[in-house]
Image 1 (cartoon, one colour):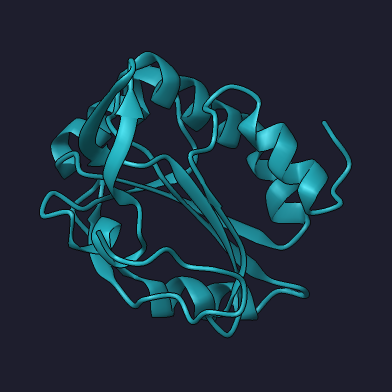
Image 2 (cartoon, rainbow, N blue to C red):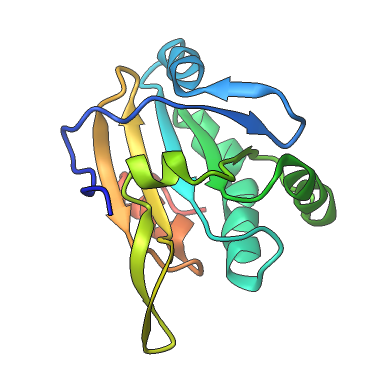
Length: 165
């Protein structure tokens, strides 16, 4: 497993397809964020679209998106799902956040979000539910691993000093 990222690290670059098949790079996301006052990027990694926990988390981010954007945050979710599945996920759940596809798991590994984890008391290899907040220059401000799907967005908002909505 790749070492985990920590505050102060430079986030590994990536270019991934989104749920429409368009390529999205971290550099583009950071450039967009840099254009807003206090602009930052939230990158969160989740195991699989259309599963209960991942649906809860994606819906929470979508429901909070307006407030997060008002605070200068751009949100993107990354999973190993293919763009076609992500498109179905977006449509089925009415998601407004951008979803990126990493089927080769290269970005997941580079960010320390893929490796050994405990699941139902067993050690397995898989996606480690993780969230990162990046400054507009690509520096990691917040790195959270093994986050809980339920209540995570509210906790992140508290951690960032944003009003709970």
